[in-house]
Image (cartoon, rainbow, N blue to C red; front, top):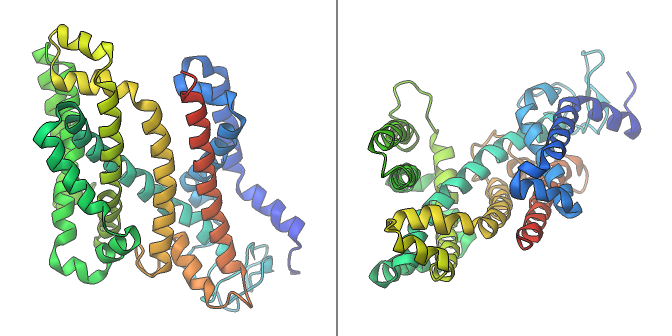
Length: 384
């Protein structure tokens, strides 16, 4: 077989991404139809910048979801004669198959590794950012609302963590040697407890006047939360449904630990501003509890800035994950994450640029999409 030209390479890639195009089309069609009922998300369709960012982000989300259908080869398979193969090179001994974006220095398919790398990034970055937000919100709300010694103590701890250079702190937290000390397990035991506390307090404050529903919802959330907590933090889930390998735990805990203090400061600052509003005073007059006011009065009115920061923070986390992978401190040495793939390809960058350039462009496009989405959300939230 002859090598493919670039028009044919792009055409075959477009065909491979067919599940993504279908999912994107359905998402946009349904979102446009129901946009008036979808709140801030529906208003996003009025922002061209936001919609471009949303399209880019959802492209990679659907790529991660359908990665097994899109990838043309096993991302870890090393095929004979495909070392540093140029884009469009036919696979020897396999009629009708090509390395669409070439091969790397270990004869692995760059296109398939790029596709599978999206799954790695979009599993860790959003999930770790969600937990970081739960930690920051759970601590930032009482710090800003009550003030005093609580605010002073929590702010001191947050400033202490933020005083360290981020990259250096990441480097220290994810090195293999740190695992021997047990620090990642201790951090996981503390940080992974916050989502359980957050959900339990949220439901308790909402249904406090209805004991039957409160006990049911809080009990169910505690049972499910502690089950997940035991597996993720201590790998003690007998079913194996909730588990995390040591490398993943190191990276995950590091992301949460580094991001949580910044979220705390943002939430604290917003609460300091909003707690003087009339609706807060009205809630206090009605006899509503402090946690109900914080979670059901103040927090919903802070959603605009927090959603924007959430999108930006996923982008920052994506860059940090890429940086860690580049330094060889990613999820695992053979992982297809973009940072590790860039590191593998950089050694022959002057001769064979494609193994490093492809994942670098993928990483750049996802971060660009998240930034554009955040800009669109900020623009629309300011109009509310």
